[in-house]
Structures are given as structure tokens and as C-alpha cells.
Amino acid sequence: MTARLFFALWPPAAVVSALNAVAIQHAEALGGKATRPETLHLTLLFLGNFAVDRIPVLIAAARTVRFSKFSLNPDCLGAWSHNRLLWAGCRAVPPALRELVAELQGTLIDGGLISASAIREFVPHLTLVRKLARQPAAEELLADWPPLAWPVTEFVLLQSQRGSHGSRYATLAQFPADDDADIC
Image (cartoon, rainbow, N blue to C red; front, side, top):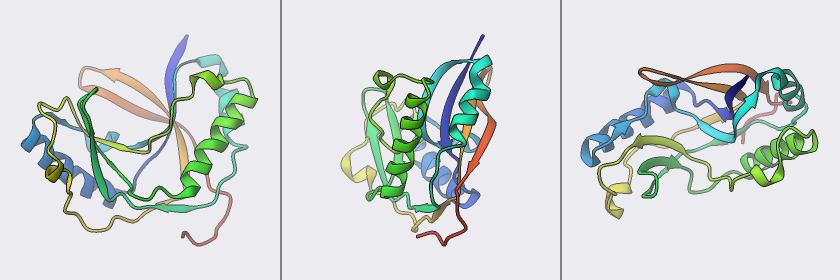
């Protein structure tokens, strides 16, 4: 038996609210379906179908990943025509985010939980709109939103469960940052 799993970051409520407004606005303008606010996340590492009986080993390995708190500031939009998505991202991706992903990948590879060949290039983004009816013009990607401060203090292991109203995500484990240092 398997479960569809991924590691992710959950944004705080204020960031979700701001990005949801952007998603609704663009879904109306471009056609498409805005991501439901309760599913808005940033994927760190997608595992896909993972053996349920190995989840405790996966969680134990992820607990060894060390990272310090950091801040994300979503401040740009992008679109991918190949899968008809509109997404939010950061013009300047914090090195701490890339380091967290690399540490997580390395830990899981070293533990034999994933294969190095299964790793995709990490492109940090939050999907805002799916099934775009048309690709946005460059000027439509200029979001007008206030600076969004997202303090990252933990990452999570999520299970995707498909239902009649789309996917929902269940948190299987939380992995806090190691320190109480200020976020920079």
C-alpha cells in the first residue's frame, strides 16, 4: 500500500489571504481555477507514491535535517504554459531555502529512501491558478501587492488525498527549525 507524499512549507494566514486575493483576481481575468486557500503551499520535495510501512523511517530521517529559521517574501508571479499554471514566487530566493531542500534531499538519498535520479530541479513556487484558459501577457504578471513577510519556522510532511472536491492535504509530521534565533 502506498500514500502520495511530499514535504512542504505552509504559509501563514496573512500570506494565504494576500495570495488568495491575487489568485482569484487572475483566475477571473485569465480563466482557470484558483487554488483553494487551505491547499496553498510551497513544495520542497515531492515523493509521489511512497510505501506506507516506510513512513515512520521517512519521518525519522527527516527529523535529522537541520535548518535555521528564515523568511520568504513572495513578490512575483510567473506562468507555465506546459501545465497551464499561474504561480507566485520570490525574485530573490533565500539561500536558506535552497540549503533546506538540499539537506532534505541528501538525507533521504543517503538513507535509501529516494533515488538521486528521482530529484527534479527545485523551482520554489506556490500554485495560484490551475487550468489557465490563456497565458498571461507580461504586464498581467505584474502583481500589485504589499510586501509579504513569511517567517519559515518549520517544514511538514503532507499526504495528498484525492476527493470529489479536489485534493486535500493531511499533515503527517512537522519538523521545526533548530534554533530560536531571529529570522533574517
